[in-house]
Length: 557
Image (cartoon, rainbow, N blue to C red; front, side, top):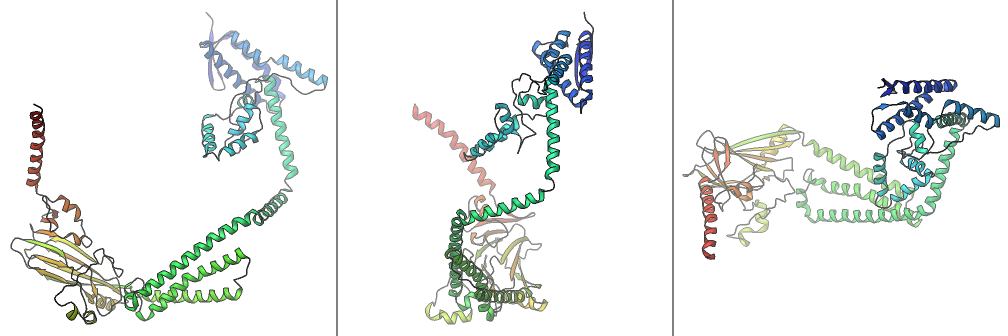
């Protein structure tokens, strides 16, 4: 039975026999004494202790035991080398005039090199492992990027998997250097020599650094110019052709748009944004200004590109000055008339009108779209309605709501009324230069609402009277019906309602061909769902499912 003690080697705890501890203590004392005159004795001895701790861990793991014995310590000392042998080798080298240590190499281990890295040190670590130049490994990774980016994926995986060489022992194992006293001594001296060399080179090259940067920039732009004059010239022509074709396409599209605007006619163009917000007598100026504002930059790019491609100076200073002046004048016109138009939206006004709805006997109301087209007196006279279409009704076929004037400007809400009398509250809103102007614009809104028995007909859009320009005119209607009133709403009004009609139509059981059925409850308007019909349908399905197996059974018999 031997006495054991607990020791701590750089943070790692070991159980060691007392005799083994004395041998290890004497060895480390000699090591510290030998390296006490070195430039950084503490770093060397710490690395040696770390290596000894690693060897102890390997010994305990391989032999499956928990205590370090004297034989284990002597085996580690034999691998590390004794101080006496090391000092004898140093004296022998001094006598022969050589300062080179001769020692055997070990098997290399794969680490990421933190001292020679561009990204993560993977390429340098692989190069050290196979004793190659790191440049070849980096070149292989670069070439593999062209194979669906596999090189990048592989590099990231190796970056995660391969450990980083943190300690001196890791860096020595990465290069295959034997981790004994000679190896640690040589590695440390090489590191110190490299640091001194780098400091010497830095002092030598610090002064001309600015000149090197200047020369590098000069060479870079010289090579860039050569590239552009050669291969870059062809690339520039290809880019120029693409730009030229794109500008031609945009110019043609712009001309088509302007022609389409003019094709609407002098009167119809007033109903297209932004021409419906400016004065009618300035529409031509606004149209021409907007066209030139977009066309001149395209013309300039086309002329410059043609000059670049064909080496022909088609764009001189006089042409450029003329186009610039015209473009600035167009910009000024558009900004001026746009600012004048925006000033007409400064103030807002609201007018309200209440219409009493005639009650029905069964408290049911049918909300439908009024598809009869509204014509002014001027339109009726121009189209000769009484002569050509006598007895006919002209329908409004603009069901898709393609109203470029002011789309979705009529909204309908439904609320519960506190009295039995249903009412329709119409709220007209508009904007203007001042309060009076806004009120006049709101008053010039015309809207038709018709009631025929239980049918309530709503127009799709409102109309503006007296050639009033568009100033944000809107109409918001609130239909108030009493409790338990039933509303059957036509699907064509879906765009004007503030709730979804289609979902309710699908939920109605059975479905009403006239539209979606709603009922006014204490909680507001609710989609009507016939629970009795749903229960009867479910019962019928259940009976059918039970009868099918019996029928099949009888047929099999």
